[in-house]
Amino acid sequence: MAPLGGFFEEWDEGAFLEAVSKLPPKEVLSYLIEVSKRVLAVYARMRDSLPKGYGWMRFSEFVETKGKQVEKLCKIALRLFPEALSSEANVEKLEFSVKTVGDYVEVLRETIRLEELQLRACRYLEGHVENQDMKAILSDLAEEIELNIRKLEEELERVEKFERKAKFSEFVRELVGDRDG
Image (cartoon, rainbow, N blue to C red; front, side):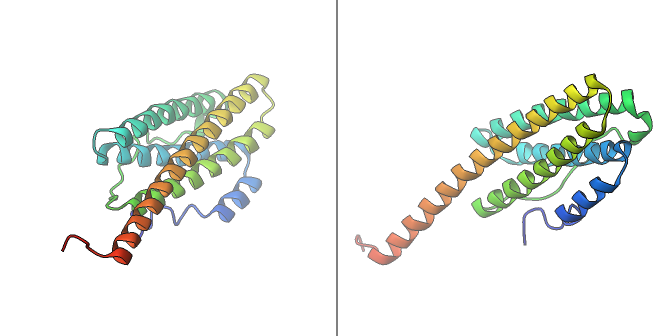
């Protein structure tokens, strides 16, 4: 079972993209805010569950960056479509655990997927907003999301290399056996 369980099941990429292409910009913005809050919740959970060190610091940066992106989206919504903001201002708390490197890899992959969905929705919204200031803000936001994706992909690559090295070392130990005993 994946560390996030069924958390991402409702965020099917095909359904998301189909929905985005049919919705008016106001609803796309509302959806984008909701997805951003969920990604923020994943980052916060990872930050809070990882030991203080590299991973904790990395996810603290992600929480800070994504928090600013959520704020930016909410400001856009208030300016363009105040009714697009839900009454919930709180970021949901997630309960999942990362017990293995494989779990960590899975969380990274799913988070990359959510960030990519956000990017597509943001680009769609950018193309359907007439206000040039809002277009510029959405363009900046899309660039920030792209940066998030690149950082997550770098982390995923680093962890996958570590996982491959660990598996190879285990294989060599099994192949050679315990020479001390």
